[in-house]
Length: 204
Image (cartoon, rainbow, N blue to C red; front, side, top):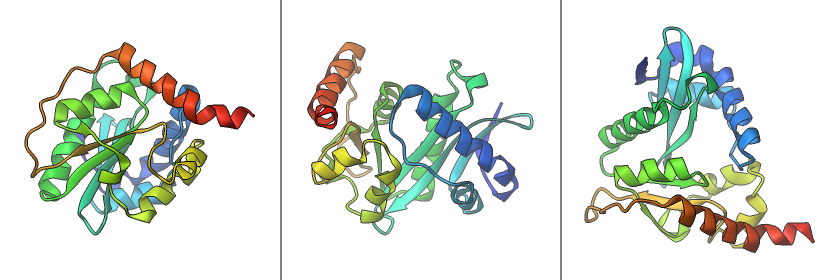
């Protein structure tokens, strides 16, 4: 398995990457901002993506986005093909793209919004800490990207202060964050509370 910085030669995988992301979101029933093959190809062309390949077979992917004129960086679209799940590949890709982000944009704050426990655990290991959305980028283009997420109405109803996602931030200039183990029961309980608060209105 090779995990490398993607370039334009990997554009042939862009459509498969988009399909895999969409299918994964549908299976999990979670919201996700959709991306087009053209968008993914541009990330590859700019050297702002990481791809995992098993020979010539696509295995996984993640890309970098810049926000707030380079003050913030997000590692987005992390996906592993179903044939390669359960072997720790997502964690390896996450570490690779995080390291690439820190090397290419050393002064930028790295942030993430996620509904997934696995991603939260990986972020925590890398030194991210949970933060309110107010500490993330205020770049409207980033938040506009959430419009294709099925939970976008929650974000708008709360004036972009909170959603079902949890905001997480790595600040290279801040005191090192000592991560605490995320307990699955606690995570699921908090997730249930959020869903009860925000999704109940949709059922009326």
